[in-house]
Length: 267
Image (spheres, rainbow, N blue to C red):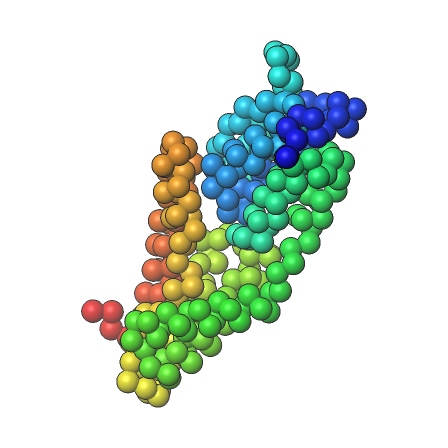
C-alpha cells in the first residue's frame, strides 16, 4: 500500500519555503511558456508543494507568475515572481515537467534531485528539429488531401511547408517578433503554393494555395484560452485568445500578400 506523501520526504530533506518558492516559480514559468494550460500549472505546483508539507498560493497572469509558499499552519509566506518564459510550444517539455511533479509527489526524488532534473529538462529538449520539420510538412500535405487536393497539390504544399516552417524556426531563434514571423512565413508559403496555378501540375491548384499556410494556424493558443476560460482564469483566457486572433490576422495578411504578388484573384 502506498505510504502518505507526507511520510515519504523527511523534514531534513525538505526545502525551506524560500527555496521551494523560488523553484516552483521558475518551474511554473517554464511550464506556461512551453504551452501549458493554467489548470495544469496549478495542479503540478500544488502537487509538489504538498509533497514537501507546504501550501502554495498561485497567481497566474499572461506574462508573470507569482507564488506564495508557506508551511502548513504557519502564516509566514515566501513570495516569488517570475516572468513567463517566451519559448516555442513544446509538448515534450510539458510532459517531462509533469512527470517530474509526479516523481516528487510519489517521493521518488528529493528536492535537490528535482532541481537537477528540472535544469536538465529546460536545457535539453530532446526533439529532433529535422524530424519535427518533416512531420509538420507531412501533416500539412495530409490536410491538403483532406480538403480534396490531388498528389501534385500535396507535393507543393509539402515543399511550401518545409520552407515556411524552416524560416519560422530560424527567425524565432533570432528573436524576431512572432507577428512578423507569421507574416513572412505565410507570404513565403503562399507564394510557393501558388506555383501550382502559374505552372499547372494538377487539377486542384487553389486548394494548394489555401492549405499551404495551415501549419501556422495558432490552434494551441485557441484551445488553451478555452481551457483557461472553463477554469475561470479569465485574464489569461482573454490574453491567449487575443494573441491567437492577432496571429491569425498576421497569417491572413501574409497569405493575401502572397496572392497579390502572384496576381491571383482572391474572390
